[in-house]
Image 1: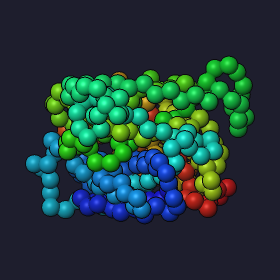
Image 2: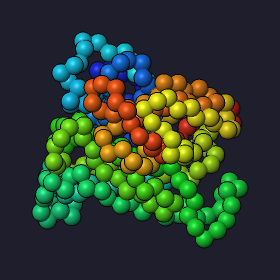
Image 3: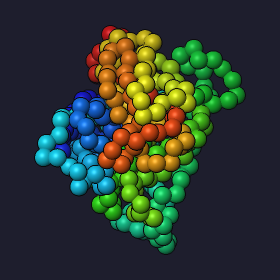
Image 4: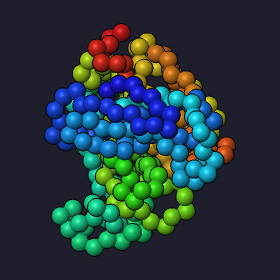
Length: 288
């Protein structure tokens, strides 16, 4: 895991170890420039992957020659997870594209199903760890997802989530335009129970906001470490159906400021959403 930055360019990140089935997760990008920007995984190879700062398709006409450099975190984890963190992949509904094959469980392809919701089970959060209490119910969790590789249809696309509970969540592909369908995508996800701990040599805090995050800046305070520098997050609700993603205007070791940015090339109001946040220290700074 680490930090990267890009304007309209592509950033290459080399694998620091061997991965059989890597899951790549992209963090919340900063808001240094005026334009809408999303960070997408544009290539996954055997030794590296690429991250690209990209405008939603509807905004390409208003694209300026230059854009302020945006900073964002990234994470690679083996399918299955590490320590407290679970990780996996799920295929979006069979709807065309190179993943839509009988081998992948798609005997027929219907492009119109590409935006359908898919449910993912995340068992194992009913254990008692980090003093969060015991019981027969699953613990609250933070879930973050990223499309693995360039969108198969070429259009700008990303994930949205809803119904995030201790036992699972729903995820779907979302474009910024008015298309009625989308090709099949491979979606990577991570899940971690709400609380604090260590992932390898990184300290972390996972939390879920109230249903209160909108297009206005929303302050989040961290409770433990003063060295949390890597910011990941996803909306846990789907209260506002307009295509949107998270941006950050501030990230310090003790807190962050986030907001919902709708993908429409202009400033738009967005209703309240619940957001899952995962903040980590850089590797080697656990306990800092």
